[in-house]
Image: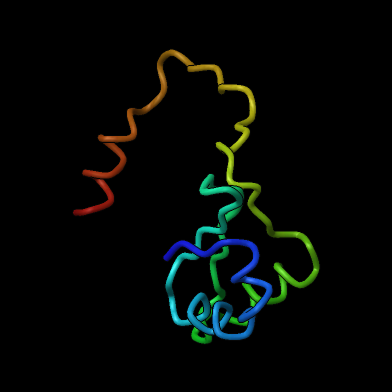
Length: 88
C-alpha cells in the first residue's frame, strides 16, 4: 500500500492497524517514496518486542554491515564432512 504524507497524518491509526496486520506501507511525498512502515505482528515473541523496545534491534533499511572475513585454516575438517558425520 502506498500513502501520501497528508493522508498518513489524517488516518494514522488505520494505517498503523494495516501495518500491524502485515501490510507494508510505503509513505510518499510528491509521489516519491520516502519511508516504509512495517508493523510488528502480535504473534512476535516477547524477545523480539523487548529488543525493539530497548533499541537493541533496529533496521535502517540498508544493507547489513558485516564484520571482517575470517581466515581459512588449512588442514581442518570440511564442514560438509562434519555434517555427514553428524547425520550418522
